[in-house]
Image (cartoon, rainbow, N blue to C red; front, top):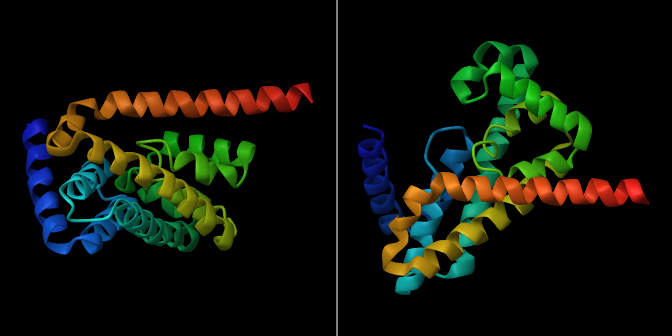
Length: 202
């Protein structure tokens, strides 16, 4: 059932991107960043495949993804800002932010500050919903936009490159979604731990 759903989403998404080009990638990433389940792990690797075919430009795809992701994240940010924490407590589960995730996000934001936004943009499964609690926390909109764009650009460059390298076989990435997720999360945890260790030594 799940595989059939993913296949259907893939067909619709790739057809949309094929017809819309950079706009399709940007819109797709904006939709994902609004907490609507449209995986960037389909959008960007397919964009990389179109780069492989010579239809699109690598940096154009990555920038479209980053800009679209930032716009969608701003929508989520303002939902959190306007609705506040009470709104997220009541309706967050419908936006992919159940109570336990809300508490977790608040702890991260309290501990790591604004850098939480940048780091979580590189963490699958977390990168989309983080905009809601930081909006409710009234994070500075300028810093939010800057960190969101920077993290989204790195994410877009990475997944587009994966699609470019796989070429005709770009769909092979789908069974590896969860493994890639774990690798990225492990790399971020290692980087943060190393930074904190060096800071403690100083």
